[in-house]
Amino acid sequence: MKKIINAPESYVDEMLKGIYAAHGDQVKHAGDDLRCYCTAHKKPGKVAIITGGGSGHLPLFLGYVGDGLIDGCGVGGVFQSPSPEQIYNIAKEVEAGAGVLYLYGNYTGDIMTFDMATDLCDMDDIVCKSIVGADDVLSHKDPATRRGVAGIYFMFKAAGCRADEGGTLDEVLAAAQLAKDNTRTVGFALTPCIIPEVGHANFELGENEMAMGMGIHGEPGIWNGPLKTSREIAQESLDALLGDMPVAAGEEVSLLINGLGATSIEELYILSNDVTELLAEKGIKVYKTVVGEYATSMEMAGASISVCKMNDELKHYMDHPVNTPFICQK
Image (cartoon, rainbow, N blue to C red; front, side):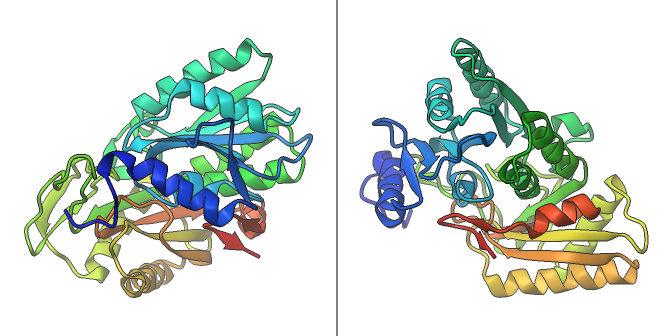
């Protein structure tokens, strides 16, 4: 294991101290708990949006806390859920009089955490509603069982915009639901990652081997086999994405080409070009393309492709400016 750390057990808290030191004008923590990560700019009367999940995925989840996106994030250990008490304390800090939307990935531990946090908030008369991202097409045939991965970006964008514009809790939830209904993701890994407190890779791949459909915690995909070209990967991914969510010629989509942590931006743009050209061959127009690291898995090499089918409402959400320590769109 080669990492720039001091001690594996202090990995998360020292990372958070670094973020607060660098970006104290934008973010803060609730009380004395570094892992209760909140915006420093609470907006009275706005629906508060809270997410949470394990560390190791930056900028997911805490990187989305900021202007135009979300308001708070419970920070768990590496690939571990935060506690219900942390989510509850964040809710008390960021709730601004219009209720709270919990928006997080579809993982059992996180679901339990947010359900219990809702019960705690109920005792303080804080109104909470929840929605989970579940965009990973290859993780399960049942949409309700699918993992939440990089496509949650579009849900954050939609909900964040609607909340920023003064929407009610139900309207913010509906915006997130619209993005969820129109988003699908396929991911693939080229190398494993190493959890600091474990000290070794969480799975194995051969030198010229890739894993199609692997999850952001190393969950098994649908096949391991010889590394394919970018064009071949793009084609197989789009076959899965458009097979699950048909997009007709003449319709528009937005794309998220997301790196998993160790894949170069150059490679991501090669992949983006292949996806764009293959969509053009089908007569599908691309409204907006976002390329970079938006949901990673430590130092895993690989990428994911997310497609969000556009309408006028979703285009408006995509165009809304945001500003966080990790993500800026003017």
